[in-house]
Length: 550
Image (cartoon, rainbow, N blue to C red; front, side):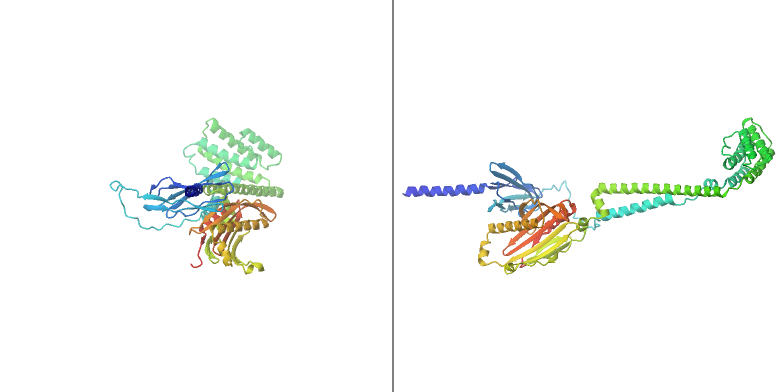
């Protein structure tokens, strides 16, 4: 009989040992090295074996103190038969030398809670050979300019570019440039231009140097040019005989009231000039001066012989000038618009390459979420005990009327900021329960608290669905604040109905539970808003809980 009892006790002890071993085998922890240098990364690995239906929560945040988490790697999942093998890796480090203990880490698998083994790590100093590496005093603090906002850089750059563009356009296109001597002469009437050309010929040294060929070339060009502009438009390219024949025809047709004597004088001088230019004839200098005086008189006679323009001709001439002015102005406008468009496009592309085209567009046109992200944020406390959180705007208190049957059981304070234009919704609320002693005992265990948070997150999801949200996806994980408060994070995607249009959106529900107080942070925003993504990340990193007695 005693032997049977001994066997039975041995079997019970063995079963208990095997059961404990199987439980512990579900969670394993290890590190890739037990000794590192200051600042060197050490890989902390947690291996979990769980059923496919179990919900596993790994540690998050700075729960590995005194070591710091520098990176949390994605979970590696492998399916083995009806179970999942999950491997979660953390990158840890320490910047002070010494021996450190990585504390036990809490792992939740379904309704059960497991703890990893604590591990010891030796952190050594980095040895420096002072014979090769000199030591220097710490440099004093220096003032640095505050980095400017990209938005103002872009705006100032655009303003400066537009100002420079306006100046260049004015200076090279619209400004009335001072006329050169050649331009001033070209704007003179043909008669005045011919008279000025004769005066310039008098000031030349052709006759003093006996350069009669050049002298007669200039002299005949002056009269031919005047005739070309006022009498016959082919006078410059016609031979002497062709020009004289045309003048006679115009005289006979009474189109030009020029005398035969004037035509004969012109014929004599033009033929003499031909002999000088092509037959090397050398007339006397005095004769050349007389020819010059004759040409001067003939210009006057031709002007007198020209008929006065009719009112219709004057009107056509005025219309022509106005048309030319309009054409010139139109060319200036086209050139201005083309250059401005090119510069604006080049500026947009330049800033777009540096800062991103969407960012530049939103800076110029404006984007509500971008304005909220880059505005002055508010760090404040909400509720009792307080939830400390940083938000783009102050959350305003909302009055929530509780049903009569719940007014004696709980109280609620809620704060909210909802931007319809940007689509971001931030809510912080605190619910205080009036538990009975029996209810307090039922909720003392970690499992009971976890179930209550899970049930609350389901209630929030049901509320989202009742408000019109569709296609809701759900993920859950542990959430740990910078001051080590633990909560449940429920997050995912959904489709919301806004003014008859469906938009993809994201949501995050953060729940904390301590004794008879439950604190909630609810975030909703549009899925295609990169600025809202950055706001949410900033908000999540700022959440901290403060104890009531503090």
